[in-house]
Amino acid sequence: MAEQTWLNHIDGAWVAPAGGEYLATIDPATEEPIARFARSGAADVDAAVRAAHRALSGEWSMLTPAARGALMFRLADAIAADRDRLARLETIDVGKPLRDSLGDIDGVVATLRYNAGAADKMEGATIPLGRDIVDFTVLEPLGVTAHIVPWNFPLGMAMRSLAPALAAGCTCVLKPAEQSPLSALAFAELLDKAAIPKGVINIVTGLGEEAGEALVRHPLVRGITFTGSVETGRRIMATAAAGIKPVVLELGGKNPMIVLDDADVDRAVDDAVMASFENAGQVCSSSSRYLLAPQIRDAFIERLCARAADLTVGPGLDDPAIGPIVSREQHDKVLGFVSAGVAAGARLRQGGGRPAGLNRGYFLEPTVFDRVTPDMALAREEVFGPVGVALDISSENEAVELANSLGFGLAAGVYTRDIGRAMRMMRRLEHGCVWINGWGVGGGQGPTGGMKESGIGRERGLAGIRNYLETKNVAIRV
Ligand code: NAI
Ligand code: MG
Image 1 (cartoon, helix red, strand yellow):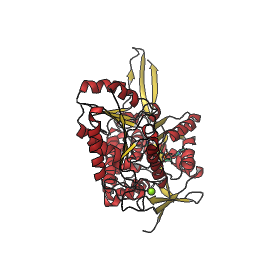
Image 2 (cartoon, protein in one colour; image 1 turned 90 degrees about the horizontal axis):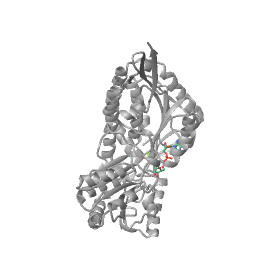
Image 3 (cartoon, helix red, strand yellow; image 1 turned 30 degrees about the horizontal axis):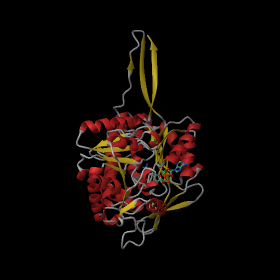
Image 4 (tube, protein in one colour; image 1 turned 180 degrees about the horizontal axis):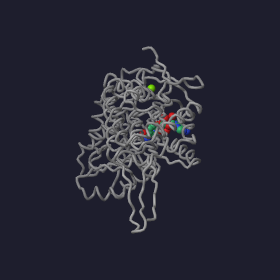
């Protein structure tokens, strides 16, 4: 394939980076470069933010919320019509199985449609202050918003925040991850088809510490939404503080799957297979720690290992169960966790190495450890790879304490047939999402986000649109 070079998408046009430099994105299944894209700096970001700022008072602002929603529905239709191409780009850029990429694009369309339908349903309030004062609120778009997204669900994460920002009437600058810019750039080609006014969505590619930093810093950016690592989230928040800019941060987790003695073990194992290995484990809400009661521990581990051993691993285009890890850096990091786990005395029960017959590409067998203790890195840190980690618990109370013992607080799951027990634990779990007997159940209509160091704010649902609305209080003396 001839390597294509992608430019930034600013004010409805393709624009070369001012510095004239480009980066390469690679196919993690082959380790070969597949395309080049702009390495943007402050000047490019400035052009994009200014375009978004102009668009804020242009044609876009004249539309009624319903008309804005109608354009978003058109954009959703354009994405749905281009589903195969977008999914293929996602697969070659980040490695995920084609079936999963198609599912991701369907999710993008659903997110856009949900928010399109809500564009004319965000209502203010009237505040009762008695006969002499009329007091009401007006909801206004925040302004230009910045969207900095990771590589695990490139277009999915982008749309999770772009769609509610558009519904609110904001204009946007998106910075895709440097590992996975292609689907966002291909998406830019659809904006014109859907008659989205120029400058409403701008896309600048490049490195986090260059393009990303410049975007967060830009004085005309009024809000920042970020998904990624805790460390980068902390840095973005510190930078945003200078301009008193609100941030929405989704920063990953070390999510406990608590399986109690009376659980349906097969259901828990089914969920663990999906939630630990899908997307090669590169999911913020993966089931990354199993906290297992002694009565079900052996059955759980044995069944999980058998299922893991059966999963096919290969290039995403072949549609295996598991594709490669996104990059060499990430692959090395995950292998580092595996060897540190072995060195610390955890027991490797399944996988742990390169699958037979795959001599290039960033592949790793689905891996399971047991006899992991709470002090080990495997039990405390986000591995972000296809690695399941089992710890023992001796009581419900110990499970909750262990679940809450880290800085992370994104998602927790409880498996038990006793709903009272599940509800008691739910109340005590310091996690933004609690799933009972079904990992990741729920939909795009419900809010998601983390407690503690897993983040600030909630995305999805109507709460997600509120992130992009300012409240103006108007009081009238009658
Ligand atoms: P990262 O958090 O550094 O990068 C995510 C995005 O932030 C990318 O678009 C990047 O360009 C941008 N960025 C980086 N530094 C920035 C800065 N100073 N200012 C503005 N934007 C910046 O994550 P990275 O390095 O790709 O992965 C490291 C670890 O983060 C992973 O191993 C994983 O544990 C975690 N992670 C969590 C994700 C989640 O879904 N919560 C997604 C991706 C990574
Ligand atoms: Mg790539």
